[in-house]
Image (cartoon, rainbow, N blue to C red; front, side, top):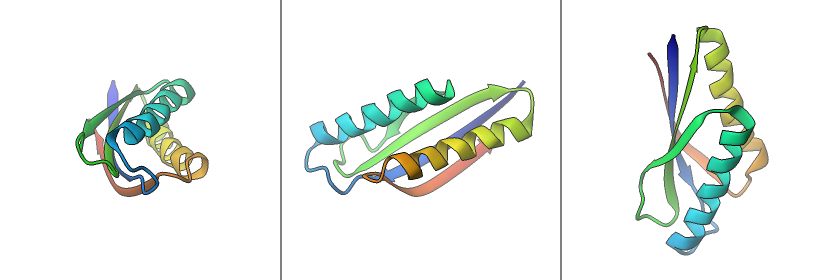
Length: 94
């Protein structure tokens, strides 16, 4: 069993309050869970209104499959959420 995880630091320039930020992040998290059947959660920067950090974890038996899943998640955010910019990506395979 292998576990792939990625930490995505996001910049959300259009939000002007924590309430707006949480709405955007909740939408992203829900869609990623539904589209990719992955574990997703907000993991840091809870009190900064234009920054968010989400963690994503996938479990599988092949490294290539898991790397593809993480790549697909990153592409999905870039292609489907123009209101969110990925600032930093940290990957880990266990």
